[in-house]
Length: 340
Image (tube, rainbow, N blue to C red; front, side, top):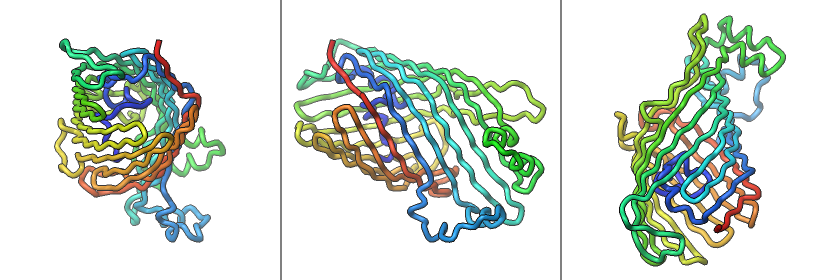
């Protein structure tokens, strides 16, 4: 959905977008014990580039020069109880980009995150809505806190330099990463959000405003000779709006986000647009993320949910500067909810 989710936030990842959305949880108790997501570079869109892929490191470097390489795997099991939610964070991501054919430099961002995020939502004023409300309004304030331990590398290294050559000489992947400068950092982060929901029959309009990683989530790393760091998480203020229509046998939603209101950037890079349409058991999705298209589908079979999609993200600082083409697979098992 183009990552236009600030005012949607109605699934297991609510706490990562807007903690205020916990105020409109559809069930008193929601449990998502087992889920996994896998992402990677979408080489299907560049099959000609990787035809007859070379085996020599120098030739491999020529093929992937200026081509973003990505791989990731993670899980975020969690639960929601009334207006409180908690999710655990287990996420590994690996990003590599080679630049400059004359003097090849390898930009690395390797992350292994372990942590937990907790949030709560508090309705403001006297107006309330519930899952049984056919009409009404509600404004909620949400707060969240997270603790993350990040192990990884965030550096730009000469491909033919001694650090890279020495690391690649190791046999184990873990030893290679350590040789590239792996360090470990710890950080606390804090989020806050506001949300207003207006419902009339099958129609619903949501406005959301969030401040994520307030003042930035900076990882503290033990002192080391090379002053190595892991990548920090920048603070971000986002605004979103989402309108939906639910006829039980058919539903659709349109959403829009304006990201990074606290940053200087092109408006095109700020903008996210998303949509989904579905029937019971099946949902089709499409979106626009910083000028790049995305699309996918979700199949929901009682205690199993499977999502697959393709999307592009911007890695550069400017609008449509460096595109990374990716795919995503998400599987959730034994996801259930009930009213107490």
